[in-house]
Image 1 (cartoon, rainbow, N blue to C red):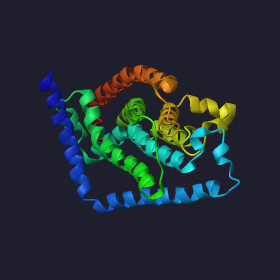
Image 2: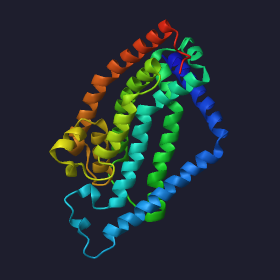
Image 3: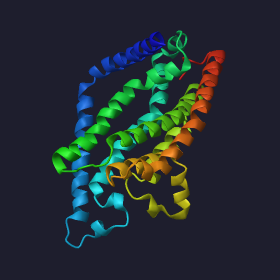
Length: 278
């Protein structure tokens, strides 16, 4: 058992080191990304001041308790959205990169199982996403006095569960990319849906009955709601059990199905000899 875990870690680490070395050749791009996060948080601070800077501002009496501090709600939403987008797009992006570089076939012909390929190909993207998501919260705290409360471990549990669910959808996206090369519908639908209908920029209660239905079928809605309820409202495990259970049901249903589809996509691509096509 220990030998298998060590081997898995070594394989994942090899992918991470490779992608990190690639990043070193684009240092300016990395620092520009950090600067863009700081500028975004700064802009949102001044936008939030237009709501909270007036004596007659109704924010404190808002029925949307997560949005009584708009800046906290926005930077939490953007931090989580960044992580979620990585969850469902990282593997597909990795597959496309391997295809364009002509290395996908050699990777899949090595004695590496499908789950290891899934984990290793996405590992570096999650390392970057963790850093950039943290910077949203860190800059908000450091420069603009945003404070969070509640259990950070419980918020982390929500983040991990939601990311795993979206990673399952990302596996389906990668399967589509491997077989059809272009025109992946998952990235468009989930990216747009997560940004518009999961409560990143405004309360989901404002969507009404029609769009509210769209919001309720998106996993990020439950993940972001749970994280905000923990960090902004200070709720405990018993109070956030409903969204937590919903995410677990999503994961139980999607994980085996997505791995099965991905393995079928690999077999089809190998049979058709299209692994190096893009």
